[in-house]
Image 1 (tube, one colour):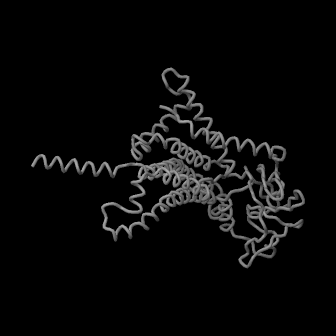
Image 2: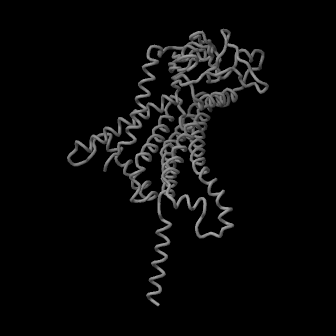
Image 3: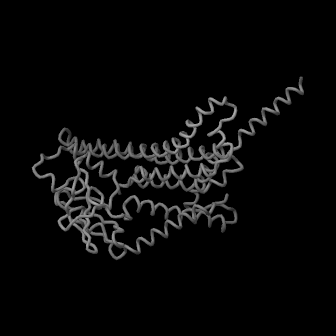
Length: 399
């Protein structure tokens, strides 16, 4: 078996970008204990909440779940709510606004402070960076949405960091597997490579070959392997306590679905386009009716890929976080030990299911991508007509 080099070159480029951005931010990134007020700025606007009633436990839990699902500029390992402190580190903020501005997100103190760089003032508000004044004023429209101007933001957020980390892991793993085949006399992988090889063979024999065909599947193996292992590793990282929800971000799933769409359309043959714009064997009036439906189908297929992955991963994270919240919601009805035991048991059960879902969603995305590509590149229609002609000649010969 040969590990193709194209996905490795793509991942190497991603690693280069990651290294460059880290060099730019290396003098400003720190790992510190960040002190904040008692209420997190992402959840409460301090200038707007004075005098309001205290929030219920359910409202607080819902806000924590929403915050977990969002992207963020911080990695928070644990918090001390009584002292109002969060323990973790801020990620590099990279802004393009009258020049390049690079600093650590910890300077925002979770939105409590305004950062001044190059004569410009910036405030972190609801996980987004806005331009403001020295007092940190945020202006709103009639729907209470911020109207402040936003700079071009190329920051290394949690999702971006996770994507770079996953790309590096894939590069290291598959480089090691490729070297094994070059150096080993019997082509048997060693160590962790013994785990990778069956998965690569599985993608090749159970996904690519049946759906694309024996003659053309090798051309698309780099993409299928990359997208399978990328989604799978991102899903597994999302199950860690770091609070990362990359594949539950619809922009990430949109990008993956867009790649499948572009590869499908640019690889399609004339039979594929013929069946979309002028379906053979169908009366002309029906061809006119079916053409817009087929064109719409070109876009609904990648749309389904995007929504399926986004919805399933987001739902899984929401359920896990909701079960953990049982400790806080039921502590008055049950003893502390009973609430913790119930929450941990249910969370463990759902987490095991999520391990299956992590693999299943990577499999489904790769399977459907290969199916769409196979529909675009196979010449099965000619083969069918040819088989029908041969069958007719055979019947005539018998008669």
